[in-house]
Image: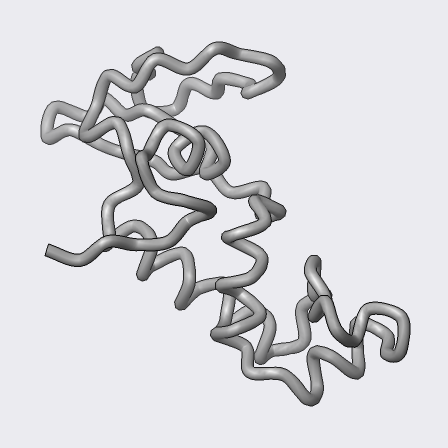
Length: 117
């Protein structure tokens, strides 16, 4: 569903047809999401995913303090825990908001792993 600027569309149980851009997450979108989430984690945002080996031993604050923000952010993307929308825009002002989990599901990539060209 393509929207005009200023028009909000909820994402509750909508079957998304991607009309703008490729059917999968691009490496540029992935890098932007990874960097933004790592910055949030480094600034003290709550961690959504804990390290598997330390799940029972440490709290999320301790994982956050001792872990690398990039690795934590990458793990959150792989587990599809981030409630993030990708907004793809066209020069005429039209845009489409696509959930990150839908782009990861549609791509041929396993759990968010990025293939380089």
